[in-house]
Image 1 (cartoon, helix red, strand yellow):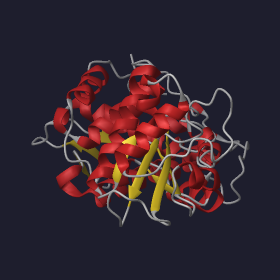
Image 2 (cartoon, one colour):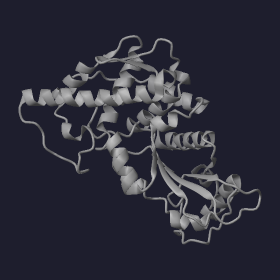
Image 3 (cartoon, helix red, strand yellow):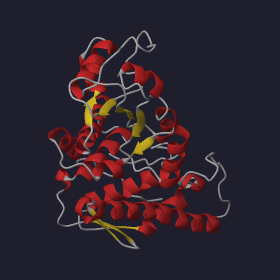
Image 4 (tube, helix red, strand yellow):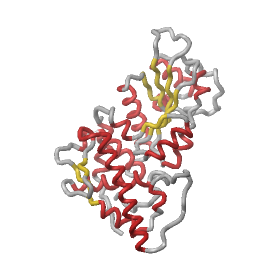
Length: 319
């Protein structure tokens, strides 16, 4: 059963994304029957969620104040429901009907009748997010799947990319995994060129990419990309985006110049949170909307996650 909806299921900075995903789940389960915006507003009014945190506050800090009267709370709930549906509308607009499986109107959302959800890259990313957040599948199954998804999308974008985390899980040492990963993308590994923790797992990097100019011989100066891919809650994102160290990795992979860091998440990151992460972390955020636009297909492991999530009962949004 997917339910027992709590405000911080996705963390305190992704409440709009959480509700938007939940509405999509309900629309998937209801097939032709849609989910009305008024249902979301009623749920928010009846459950005393902190509506100030439906999106990131202007100063970036949590606000624990609640409205005090039922009429004020219901007015705020209507506004909050509009924020949720604005995010759904953004998904529809960015991904277009080619990639987004739902029809969206001013009053609600419904599953498109002509859409095969098991072959949908969007539903695959949604299912990965939900499977972890609601404990449908164990982290050990979901996290590696998302790392591979990110790696595959980056390859389609033209970057020679490798899932360092996957190699590391099959190797006994970080140094050995680094050498294999660099060889796969045409970089020159130098494990001892930068300090590494004694029991280092990945030194903050799950995916390694390279856009080079040279042939087999790597000359000084080339473009590298180092990424952290996480299915974790939004509270962890400000820390995760800073985990890859460009200075250290420039030495480890032979680029000589600092590789560009990125954070990849299967969630839809709201615009204000996206701006804050990008500026504070000095790195690019690859969220669901950016990844799905360049994801061509759904593999068997992803379909397994889709089926697992689709097979769960989803608790209705009631007060």
